[in-house]
Structure formats: structure tokens, C-alpha cells
Length: 281
Image (tube, rainbow, N blue to C red; front, side, top):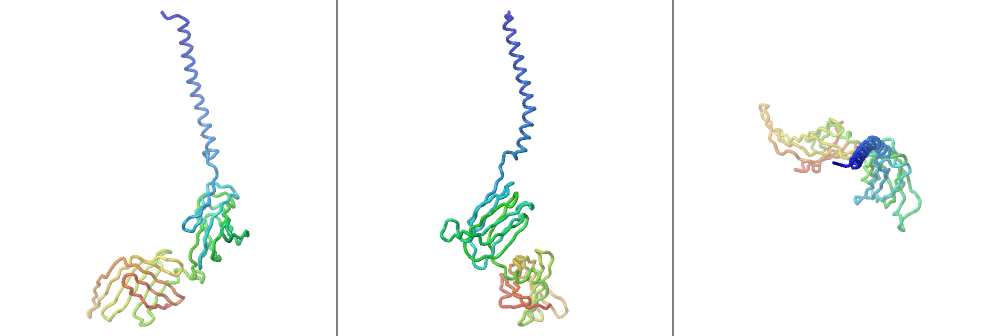
């Protein structure tokens, strides 16, 4: 027989365990949702971030995650001859603004000048380009408002033809070879990144060389292609003709020199070498 006091102790222990278990369930039901809500309100514990780094390819990367206004960092950029500076903020939130201050020289060196040369502010989702004197620059990058996303500052060659108002559409139309008049180039726009081109060159009364390709813009005055199909059309006295394929997937480009002049670079056979085409329009 089990003594009464032992039975009582076991019952007390059993009651205490049940109370602790029920208390734990209650705590979980109350505390876990509360803890989850607190994490959401605090951004899951992540702090606002704003980073600026200079890359080996002479560019400056900016990364932001809910960065606060007036967050800032420093990067370094070298501008060469006939180069312009580009601030690409297309990766930032559209409500944000990025302010960049350019100072000649590298901070901490003898060439550094403690005076800002110029400043540029770019809105998120946009980009800007501008010229600058060749040399090294210390770039102060400042968040003009809350920012999220990424941006890049870099240099690129100045597109002088764009400055003169030329665009890829300036190549649209018919162009004739200036010296002999036997060659013709027809360029038609399909979309902003697709232009159909056909080159005809009469070698004789019985033969015509034909090149067809789909070209894409490179800058403001060049159309590049990689899918050229070159064939020779042979005509007979009875009006019938036959086609002989020479090659496919050839590459090259058409370059606008001025309003009325164009050249053709054929990478496969140099067919357009030394030829100048003038506008028929």
C-alpha cells in the first residue's frame, strides 16, 4: 500500500506539470505573435544602409536600403580625354534623389583641391551625362532623400555625333555608291533596336550581289549587324533568275559620317572598303 502523503505529493507534481504546460501554451500564443509584430515594425532587425565603393573598372557603385537623407560616401573617378561622366540612377527608387559633388584630385594627396568643382543631382529612375576636364576626381555621393536600390557612376567616350543632333534614324533611306553608282543601300526602321538593311551591287548586266541583314544601333550614328546573308543573283535572257548563297551570319556595320555621307564596313569580305555612299533623299 502506498502511503497517503506519497499519493498527495504525486498529485501535486501532476497538477504543477499541467499548470506549467498550460502556462507555456498561453505564453506562446501571446508572445509569438507579439514578437513577430515587433520584428515587422523594426524591419526584421535590419538597419538602413548606404554604401559607396570605387571599382577596378573606374566606376563608382552606390547601394542603398532605406538609407536616410544626407547619408553619404566617397568614391574616386578618372576622366580621360574626350570622355564624359555618366550618373546612372535607373536602379534607384523613383521618389529618391542622388547628389554627387565632384572635387579635383584624390582626397589625401597633393593634387587634391579642397573646393567643389561642380555638383549634379539625379532623380531615381533617371540618368545624366556631362563633360568634365580630364583628370582625377574625388566624388562625394549624398542621399538627397530616402533611397533604395543601386546606382553607378562611370565614364564613356563623348558621342560627338549625338551632340550634333544625329540619331540612328539619320541613317534611314536610300544611299548610292558615289564613284560608280552601281551600289545601293536601303535602310528601313522596324523598331528602336531593329533596322532592316539591304545592299545591292550590280557586278554586270547578268549578276547582282545582294546582302541582307537586321541591324541594331550602336551610339547615335552606327548600325551594327551579325546576321548578314550574302547571295549572288544571276539573270538569264528569258527573264528567269537563280540565287547562289555565298555565306550567312556575317557581321559588319554602317557608319554615318555626315548628313549626306555613309560608309559600310563588311567584316567578312571587306566588300564596302573604300566606298562612300551618298544620300538619295
